[in-house]
Image (cartoon, rainbow, N blue to C red; front, side, top):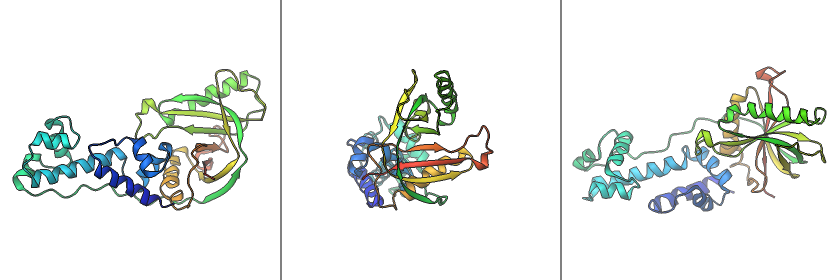
Length: 278
């Protein structure tokens, strides 16, 4: 389960197929990952998004073509995926600090563009458990993940109105999209609450269910603003070095053991739970 080799395979595929299908679905297949997990692992290990890799690789190819061939500028632009020479020239100058014409005159390609280096990961302890599973109800949320609190207010209000005051368990959350590849206004998530087995899901809410499974767990202590760092450690360090694959059936989720309503930020406890493949 060598994650780095699988991501290297994706980079090689991109380089060999710049004029082909480089969709996330196709590249996830090359990496033998589900799309849900692929882009998150790729970004943490490579140091950039897939779109940034494609753009960087195309510009590197263009710089070599400009320095070593007489291929007309519009053809170079088209070969590198740009709709016209003007947009290509703007991107080229922003990347290299010189125009395509300057590279052609000098006959020397500028230094190769490389991905940004990743900083050191904050360290977290990893725990492996048998997740017993649960059922519950959830309120859908669209938009910025940081604004999911509005969905929780709606969720709790709906449950209280349904007479579930004494039946609500821990709160959970699902984040369905990668914010590095999906516009913020299109991000999808669910604010959920665990309910006892057999309790009906109130009208207007979506049912959620986690089957019993093996899981990897990171516990984050502190403000919720630190959770993206914990997710980065999970995808960039813990999962690749675990020798395990994420489940293609059960999605990862956050589970909250206390609430900012009555807990200071530094004492908040949040579990990031990653179900694993059998």
